[in-house]
Amino acid sequence: MNGFAKTLKVFGLIVYGLIVWSVLTFVLVEVGAAPGMAGALFLLLLMGWAVYSYLRYREGRQAEFLQLLIAAVAAGMPLVPAIRVYRDERPERSEHWAHLGWFVASITLLLLPLWIWLRRRRFDHRVEQFADELEGGTSLTEALRAVPDVASRETRLAAAVGEATGTLDSCLRRADHERVGAAWLEVAPRLLYPFLVLLFVLGITTFLMINIMPRYQRIMNDFGQKLPLITQTLASAWDAIDDWSDVIFQLFWLAIFGVAAIVASPTVRWYLPLLGHLYRWDVQGQVLRALGRLLGAEMTAPHSLRLLADAAELPPVVQWRLAGAAVAVKRGDDLADALRGAGLLPATMVPLVQAAGRARTLPWALAELGDHLGGRAFRLVRRLSLVIGPILVVAVGVVVACVVLGMFMPLIQILTWLST
Image (cartoon, rainbow, N blue to C red; front, side, top):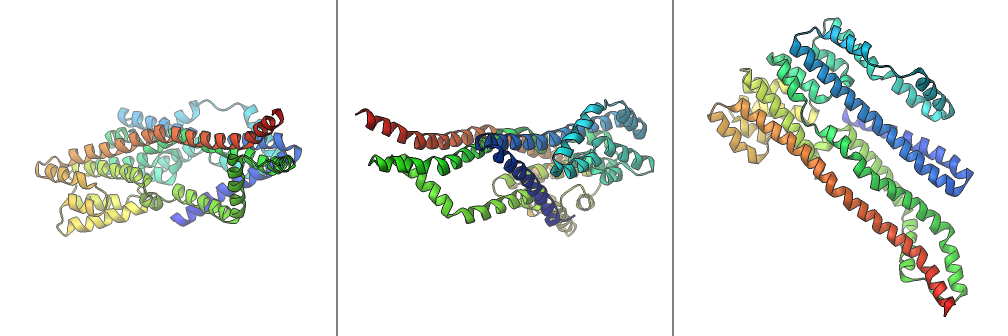
């Protein structure tokens, strides 16, 4: 599936969630405005928590499955029996939880397709499919490609490189490294929390501006008073938002499509400003680690680059860059220059790779540089969350303060005028 088709798929899932939320919110608002707004926020938090829980659960199960593969390969055990024991011995969910899930899905029929999709993609079911692939004589790499949900992209790449070099054990162990994807899941709540609070504040502000502000204006006109400056500014800002509502609505859908493209397309993430650096560092780290392992197995540089270019575990934007680097090395270019020209090696690391080539320590140097780039991206994601999170909270606090002052200053002004 190409990047555009994946983007449309993710966009459809986001729109589907918004439709479900909108319908349920409309029902709640019909019950009562104030309870409806609180219920809408609760539904949004519940849906966000469900998606986040699913992603965290899948990431945890993939890490657990990787540890199983590492233990089985290190001990020289057959993989199929180990996987089936793992599948059979894991505790099953209680039956009443399943009945409760179907009950909730039957009440909110809009959620029924999503529930069916999740049931069909249960991790235990995918593990069973993976075991069947291995039992049918498929190699570990091909089985992981056939059932990609059971392992992360890093694990699948490590398995492919490990089987190609005969060092599967050590490659799988290196895959259990600091992963940027897991870091994003860890810091996502810190970044999304301020946006959810801002959405709730905007909902309350909408209610106040539609129902309370016109009454303020009539009262102040009756008393022959003008609204306070901050209230006038708030009203003017609301009028501007109302005038540009069509443009804002279009930008909203464009933003959703942009988020879907970032989630679905590695090419968009590669060229994304600012945050694209983190993604490139992570992918460059994977490529350098894999290339160091292949060169350490006495493979030539062109053959190693071509092998990685054909690896389905790497995104297309990296594959064609690796293919270009392979062509450059084959015609006689230096490996460091070829990687730099393909955008797979930072300029600051080119001298290090060239020196390692002269010292005949190139495989070790590439592996260490790969670990350095991956670790840098992992740490920077965490640091950004620690910086951006408080900034967003302060920004939301400023918005709340402006709304509160704008709505309460007329009351203070009226009370002050009446007391004189």
